[in-house]
Image (cartoon, rainbow, N blue to C red; front, side, top):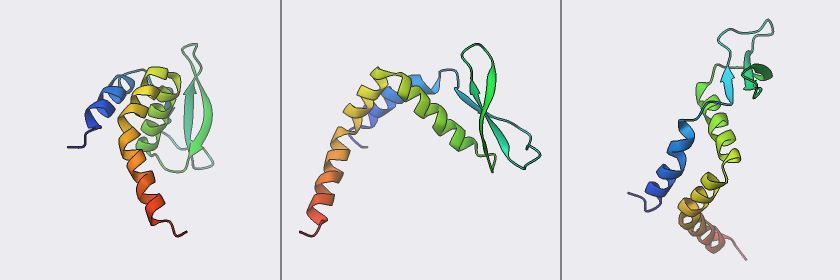
Length: 99
């Protein structure tokens, strides 16, 4: 198991359970796209864009990104959880880079 996994899990779990910021329409528009809705903050939704495919993974990623953006605690937990792997990746890239 990766050393940072428990911290990453702890940072992300509360974010997955919050109300979504984005949702995807179920029917294609006349132009052939699926409408992407964003919460207005007043209990309603407005069209924010559109996706060519009904890609629910993309909507989940958008919701996770929006949740992280709104949560300084989650940002700090993610920094802490990923600091080791990111630093190691940087060291490996620097070592592989020709001078």
